[in-house]
Length: 179
Image (cartoon, rainbow, N blue to C red; front, top):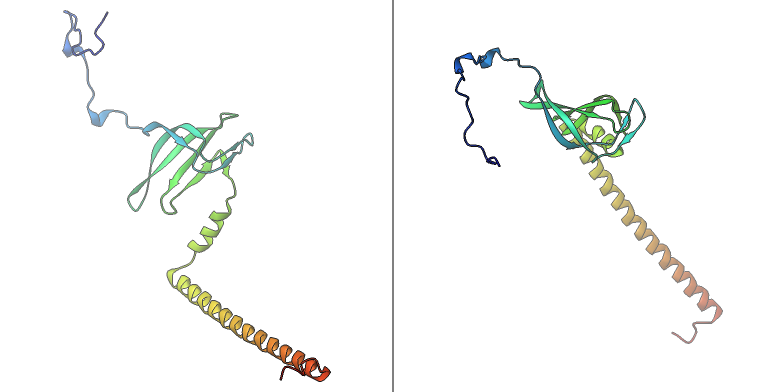
């Protein structure tokens, strides 16, 4: 049996190290560096080729590529996965600005109602947000004031009704013995 953890390599007697040619690092091919990673689908999507739904959380062996783009010095990555039914290529990349992912090709992202609400909020500036919050606060206070007035009016009408019932009872002689 051979040794499991080999510490030394066998060099034959006729080995000549000068025959081995090494290329310097700056002359080596530097193409897109694709790493294979295991990831889950970050959002629910539908393949445009076959119509297969791929749900959020489905695991894939994906190729990860670092793009030339950056957002605030944060690298943007592109992921390549394959459809589970038709094996067509689907690509999506990170979107650090919105803390999300964007689907590039091969699939269409399914509708998510909470994303639509978020997008509406994101389009506001800080001043617009402050104005909106102040306006909503004023409306809420006005509504509470109206509710208090309605409650007071209802109490007044209840007391009027009770007085009318008491007066009607006195006229008919029902309450004669009470006072």
